[in-house]
Structures are given as structure tokens and as C-alpha cells.
Length: 105
Image 1 (cartoon, rainbow, N blue to C red):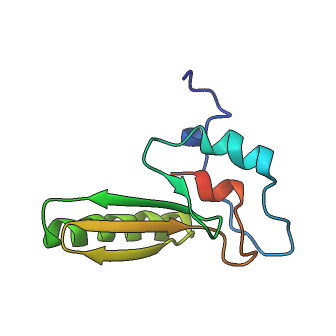
Image 2 (cartoon, rainbow, N blue to C red):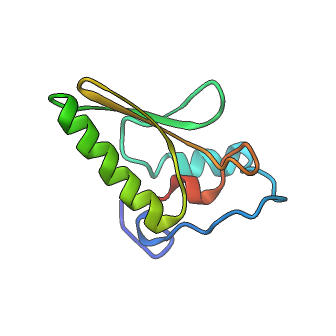
Image 3 (tube, one colour):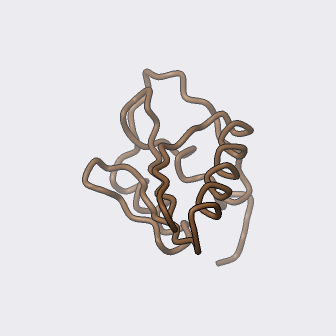
């Protein structure tokens, strides 16, 4: 894929103050296709991915890296950590749905 300024990789999160609608299905599909493989839309309509890692400390280190990025972007996913995995679930809590910022990594 040719990377342009419209690509998600070139964008930063914009904090949601609420009061905006979540993305429609067409826009969600367009943005979803730009994500790296492994992501799904779960039953709640949130972005979800499990990252497999070699052991528990690697999972914790990965989660800490996600936490640092999340603080920088002021956009925080839910994390579930266990031996050899870290699951990441992303959506905009203020509107209980997806916004463009949820797709930015």
C-alpha cells in the first residue's frame, strides 16, 4: 500500500470529547483494511487483537510499551495480560463506539 498523508500511520490520535457519532460501517471497513493483519472486530464492535509472546515477562514488557504509547496519544485500550500473551481491545469509551483515532497505531 502506498503511504500517503491519508494513511493511518501518518496520523496522531485526537481525543474525543464525546457527543459525536461512532463511525458508520463503510468508514469502519475502510479504516479496518488499513490495519496490519491479526486485528478483528469483536462482538462488541471493538478492535481486538491477541499478541503471542514467549513468556510472562515479555507479555508484561509489551503491555508496558503499549501503556507508554497510550499515555503519549492520550488514548487508552483495555489490556489483558497472561503467560505468553497480551490482548488489546480498543474503542472510544466516551461514545462506546469506534472513531478514527481507534485505528491509529
